[in-house]
Length: 574
Image 1 (tube, rainbow, N blue to C red):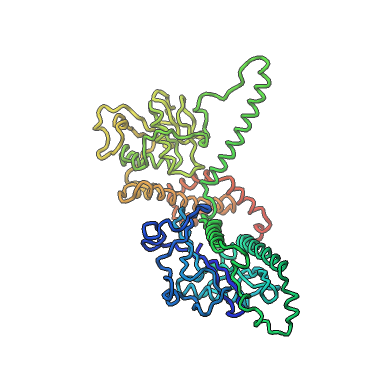
Image 2 (cartoon, rainbow, N blue to C red):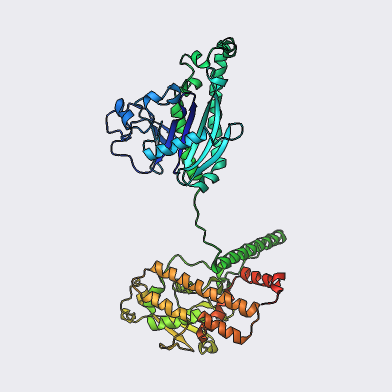
């Protein structure tokens, strides 16, 4: 998280002062900074805290000791600071934490080294302890602007027996430029910073009670009521926070807490890409999955009943038919692990451009595609590739059957080589048959085909009762698919994405046509005008739209019908 967390203090002599701040460094430190190759290796102990490597090694960009530190540091001069305004001793290297997971450094010092950051932290410190306070002066508050950043500030008091009113005023601030992120992090920051404050106040309260028990200050001050208070302090009132809490490792603990706060607050909120409404394919897949789960539950209950009924007679429970060809639901079919055809481009190379165009035309138009082969894996692979051209709801597969199945049951049918196909199907213009024969020689394959050796043993013959002429335009989507497949500059993955976009484009046209004709019941003249506007007035495009209309999800159809039945839909058109 790009933010700065700082501890601030209101000094009675010097006003608001920044005591300790922790910032995030995304860029790697200069060579030699924080590494063990330079001098001083092993001088400082390291420890692991929540996956963050702790160290107090000298930063290469930190000011050096002595006078050079005062001249290079953007902070106040040493003469303008008292014991209560100072956290780390002069020349202290500060603290660095290395996050091994993200290679981010968390650096703590009294002031930010960068002048611009120092100015931002300084202004936030002054505002948090002067004008930007909540009622009661103790509690959280939010302020800031686009130029100087936005600030979450939590003010609190620390008990001090030598201070005016027996307490000193502090604040912990978190500064970042992202206003929305800071507001969304408010509950998290409030809880964690409140825990740090409670721990500081608890330690200071113990010291305060011990000092009051040994030497009560209230009675002593009442006896010297007419003496100016500032002359009675003798320089002991402005004590450091370490002496108020009696904790010499206070700054190291605060560094650990601030570094963890920055890391945890940055990882708790992540940006997510919203892809909008689900596509029709996604809706259909969800519906198919729900149907399968319901079917499996019904099968489980029926089998349990059969077991209870027939268990006494010692008979086996009734099982599902072993013939997988009877499973017409495409959701039940899982493609084989072995992929003979790698992609549509690969199939086009194997079949040849004219045969592939004929096959693709029948697939897109919803005609029955029959593959006859002795190799069931080859048929499975072919259907796995061809189904990518259609919406999920338009695919009905019987992967491999021992008998012919009617077209209303499936539009992809796999058959053995000896299965007889009815003559009317062979002569029909609504079916295409791909017969796979054993090739006499490998030279029968088209030139330039980069297939596996297993495909070189086969010859593919594509026949249909309605041959698609080469000069026939066909549906518009077919021409675009062929253009993508022939473009060698496009990889297979890019072609797949082109198919997804083309299917979504034409499914949107299907939705418009469905609402126009099935829901609104417009006349044919208006429908023709709509098809012209959609760019689908040709005969093949109209047939394609009507077929793809069967692939619309039940969710979409029910949504349209419920909209029509609503009172708002019954209002007359203007």
